[in-house]
Amino acid sequence: MQKKLNLVLFGPPGAGKGTQSEKIIKKYNLTHISTGELFRKHLVEGTKLGLEAQSFMDHGKLVPDKIVIGMVDDKIRSTTGTSGFIFDGFPRTVPQAKALDKLLTSVDGSISVMISLDVPEEVLKERLRNRAKISGRTDDQDDVKIQTRIQEYREKTMPVSSYYEGQGKLVIINGVGTIDEIFNNICSVLDPLKELV
Ligand code: AP5
Ligand code: MG
Image 1: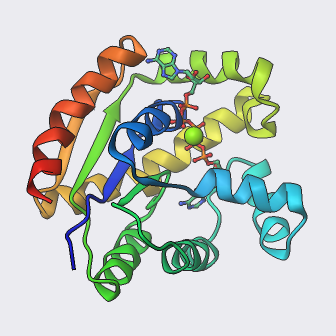
Image 2: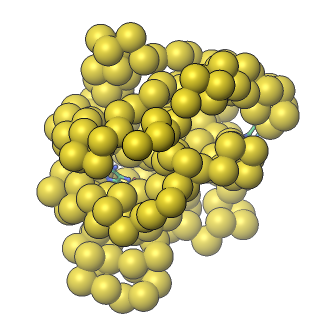
């Protein structure tokens, strides 16, 4: 089987994961898996999964691992003919990262690289407050929810970068600058990897 480019795009709330994902999927023809977007879709459709996730998301807390992993498992297994995945907002805990490794192994794949977007906290808050005006996302609407999301990131999600660093897969990129500048820096990491697959 042909090897695929599987990317974890990592960073705190407001780091630009969604913004950069849109550009990356177009250039590299990857399948985008954003767990936040999948949950919001379930919520709109009123599914059981959406209802289970809602109370956690509304408070800026992480949704329990079991629910998230089951949803990603379904998505990976139901995707055929892709050149690879970009994981946005997943994995967010070390158990999620371990589960993803297992899952990819079972479909003959692995993570190629984790790109971590580095953005100072004040810039994150400013971006999310601005996005609140247009996003309609309830978790952008007040500073307490934003602070809880950043706290969850620090306590539970940051260790995920050490997990990939231990596998020699972590690349940190400055997430402050214009969207195109950041994208160009991401491409300079992905282009050589794309040639290898
Ligand atoms: P999720 O949807 O993943 O949200 P998040 O991590 O809080 O991240 P955001 O989507 O807010 O930020 P982003 O990095 O995508 O930034 P964006 O590109 O939009 O998760 C939501 C919730 O779902 C979680 O709180 C949790 O409850 C649950 N959940 C999801 N996944 C989970 C998991 N794996 N485990 C457990 N629970 C999970 O950019 C932000 C803003 O900045 C935008 O307005 C954008 O236009 C602007 N911007 C972007 N780049 C730039 C730039 N370079 N300069 C200026 N502005 C910029
Ligand atoms: Mg996002």
